[in-house]
Length: 83
Image 1: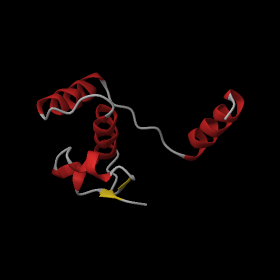
Image 2: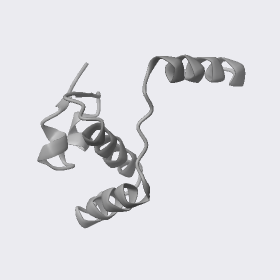
Image 3: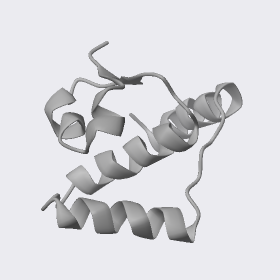
């Protein structure tokens, strides 16, 4: 994918979806909770996505990476489904 194609794709997503942003305290809490559960590396991004889903009151998190999300606590795990 070229840079131009990636930007077009991201712009399309931006127009169709609502962006959910964590504030400083929410971000810090999510990182601390993940660290307490020994969640490191790229799985931290899953924890942040899970926290955004909670903030947005999402009922479902669609992912092919179910195992990573299910270890992030029951509030996130109960929302996880495979597409």
